[in-house]
Image (cartoon, rainbow, N blue to C red; front, side, top):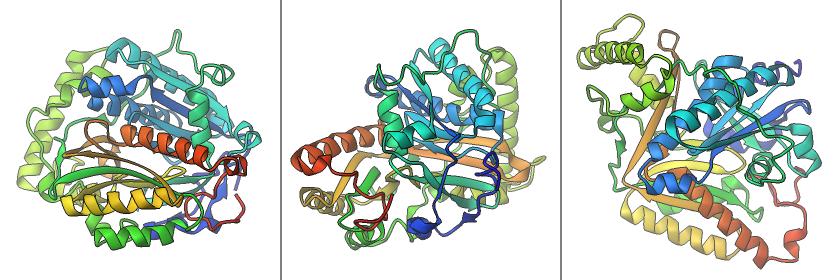
Length: 410
């Protein structure tokens, strides 16, 4: 395959339990770039009750770049308060223009500061990281990237360091509005049916493989999040609630129709009315086929993914939550795992629907009130504490990626 078409021509897999098959991960070409973006002081926005705003900006980063470059060409990982994407050198200029537009829009419309950088994969490799990926098929034509190599974690450190980011920072002066077609915020929050929505980030240190470690998690939960699909999906059944007009429609209009909000409201309300009719009757409305859409909706979410670590959004009972916290606390104390965890009573879902008639849609799921963003902050604190505890061995080569056996090559 050509370097430019690396991702679009990459074979996909559809059994998530196979995400730990390390030999199938492929190194991204050296001349590709990681586009990294996150919201500055997102914790303050969470404290102010604005986590849905934060989620929308993170999803807008993905929507803008995919709309500009092409949905099959760009691997991405949604992080709650930002996103990471990997783009070919040939697509870098247009992708950076789209991302710069989101930076400007976040500041002008949402009063949130989005920092963004374009970091060469070659530079990350020189600094000790890597970007290797596989393409996971959610449903035909819809994919998520599974990424290993600690390159994303390194890109995140660069992004948040005022000195390190300077050579890579994306400027946002005199930029056009980003193309955000298909970005929407219309579903009500997804309530927990078991008691707790848990945003969980897990990374074994290498004493056990990810698959082996998750066997222990499964013993505590009574199901394995890597294999038990029916126990992990959130966007299904009674959790789904659509109200007219949607509470999130105003937020959607502010972002996607900043240059003509009257037109945006008119278009949005007409689409919502058509959706309500199809939702209530089960009958197709134009390209919208409710039966097909709801079957796909449950599949096309990113409630589990690998972006250097395993990231999950789960609905757990109080007993399951207590069991998994006890298990992870002990495993962390034994130096087997680094983890971050956040608990809320509902999940948020932000949608990116490029072509409903062609079944091209993906949905970003996160725990409410901080979700993956706060879980990631907790993860980083534990990682730093563990490295300090293991000094001087922490100065040794980085631990294996999720799923790797100790001593395996990065």
